[in-house]
Length: 228
Image: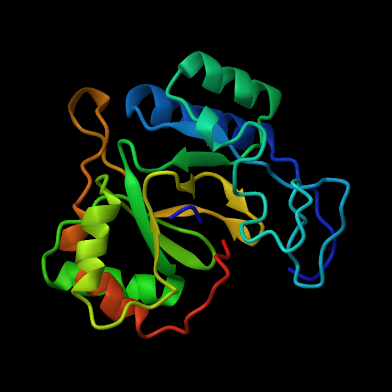
């Protein structure tokens, strides 16, 4: 799918963090052939909102994913070209790393509490999982690419699908570690394990996970806002 009250703190990342973002973007793009693009980031001239979230640099009121979405360049510019990736993160070393989904990798996400519950259930059942990341509010499970037709058939077999469950396929995106969102740092719950010779990590099929995701999603309130 195409989807900390207190003292004001310094936003710029230390040099080590900036290098980590560039190196991660290069691993995703050059080694694993995942298409990436820099995120918009935050408005360093802005002030902290009452919620503690930093204003998004896109200046969109009530931005649903502050800082952690593409803007300039847009999602269509996402690339595997290491020269482009180096240029982007040389110019903007603190930019979040945004993955364009639907090509080599897709994703499904759900609220953090439900996500942890779903992972526990799948591990007890012996379901093989690939990389899983956590934002401060959501869990994102990376999966093999799926079509809208395939997803539609899977969801049609369910009695009810919670709107808190999100699917990130063709034309969608997710932010990847070590990026930060408006609410805090992204982290790997299940880190990617590269294949032989540094090949992209193995990814499960969405059809093997959708039942557990739907069941877990039913335990959390629905919501329209995709907060990271």
